[in-house]
Image 1 (spheres, one colour):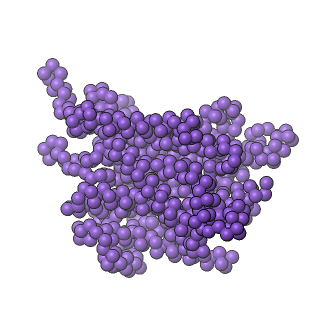
Image 2 (cartoon, helix red, strand yellow):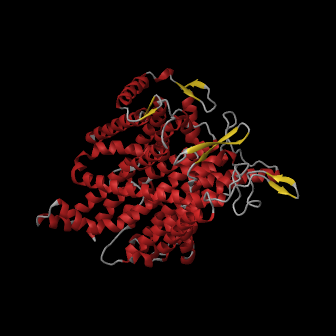
Image 3 (cartoon, helix red, strand yellow):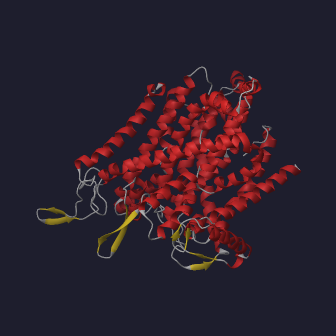
Length: 293
Length: 330
């Protein structure tokens, strides 16, 4: 246990150092408009960033409009907005996935094959395409019927919620559904399901009580991947909707390493603990043993 | 060759091939590779339209702000896009494999440290990393086009190198624990013999799947950096009307096509949607190739392969050990 904590702290520290090293990289390649390899200025920039990180309270950042504001407490509001979108999308796609996989298990073999083939096509759609199509169709609907279903662009006073959440949930929905399909297929051939079948339980009872529970545990083991997927979609989404979230903050302050570092650390640290704790407890509860991630 | 018998692989490869051939043969028909841009549209001597033309006025996919036909632009850009993607994925694969072998042979004891570094790639999207590295050089003058493109390609390769090598390294390390490897070691096999005799047949088919997966990832990365207004292969400022300037991509590769039209999406959606559709179709055909390869690999009775081991990035590592355990206990 102690060793576990020690190695986790080591991991946390190494990652923090790496974050600082990465956000300073631009000064390695470009120094006063000269393209090249500037090791000196890179080291200077790393040291400077570290110093600035310790007195981050009076830092200021550049807004999308070019205005300069102080970083705190704005950053928390932006962070909250991004995370709200992220988690609502995740929740939404999870619920839909569970409903869909319920339908999937109850359908015939032919339909199952069809669903699997459609999934190959759907998972290939780039995220940009989905957002672009969503925006264009809302605009088109607005032009035709004068009915604005959702806000297509976000401005600080009038944030859009519904369309970003919908767009952000489509691709994870497809990924999650694919994951469920694979896991459910794997689970149904196991002996305990056969036994349950033999005892005469209905299909839906077995799905809800037995299969779903085991699939959800597997899902926890893959939560990091899904999280990464959501984050990278969120990044694109914030740019395309011009949302004033944490990703846009990082994007517009690409010249100020300490702001980028703060942004990335804000995303990293809470989720680091979240994943460590959930994986620890899930491993305890399910008895499947801890998984290295 | 055995893999070509799969319909999916054949279809995917054919699509890529036809796209490339069309793209290269355009030069034979048009001077610049694309038909002359339409500037204004007259009907019975009356001015009825100016660029961008809709798909109805300039079939089949409309035109951009300069009046150039989108369909031919996409075809013209296809060769740059596909060759770049293939090159980047190939270099990622080769370098990743080399570092992966180094990692599996010598660096496994320092796994904890690598894990710490590795964590970043779970929390920073690749597109953001690419933006951090690629955006600073846009503001520099006096950088030649060759330097520009080679730097961009270099970054796009390097960005994913660490996760790829660690993942491949773990995979190789796991394989090195198998009984037949131990037996071979006991009989005195050297490291290079282990690599070329014992690991090669295991790695080769997986590498094909892995390569195609990289192609898919790089393609989606290209689509993502499109909205970041990063133009692969250089950009150029053109004047549309008086006082209105716009960057266009010099190479017409697809992400440039998407990026330049993006902020006009409500005015001319076809400028953005059609290159994205081509992205989607290309990714679908690559995924088909992957599916076909995996199916063919499963058919082979000699080698048991669980395609899941090698999918995506590192995340399935947890599964690997449990599956291995299952295989052993059976």
